[in-house]
Length: 182
Ligand SMILES: *[C@@H]1O[C@H](CO)[C@@H](O)[C@H](O)[C@H]1NC(C)=O
Image 1 (tube, rainbow, N blue to C red):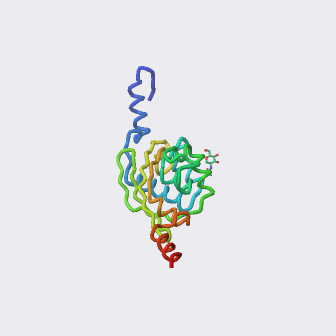
Image 2: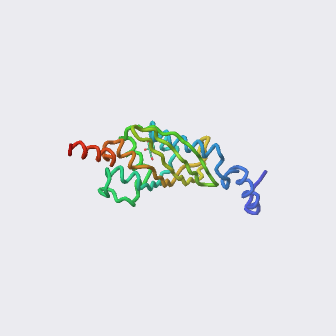
Image 3: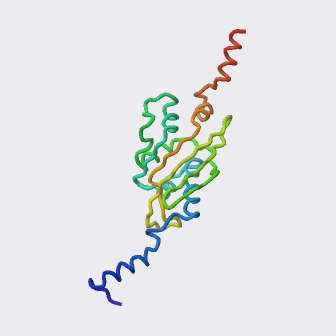
């Protein structure tokens, strides 16, 4: 077979055959693998998995994470600002974080976006969250041809702050006051 410029249409068709899934949508396998891998980044972080799962220009928005970083209040991180502005920023923060439990509860997905409802079985309070992953197609030499380039995730940060011992629940504060008055 010989290709020439007059055979451009044939080349396009051949390229489409060689890369059949360029315009394809996420499959259940892609969505569940990305959700599982994201969970593993939370429960047992590794930079290798972060590199595979997240796109280099990854961005993460989460008022819940910002409020955890601030320990409540709105400083030093602006509550509505970007949480991580690149994969490298995410990686350096994650490398120093203690692991927390993470279990996927539900997955919904469409062509390029995955919504995950998850549970972190912390103590004393469980934390439920919902994270939305926008994905980009990459010709990776991997079972999953997508990476996450944007995450919007929110969760019960009051429960998490209580688990960290930073927030004292109103019910316990009241008990303290009663004990003090008695
Ligand atoms: C992850 O990717 C960065 C570049 O973005 C590279 O410097 C680093 O060595 C990679 N780490 C692993 C474990 O693959």
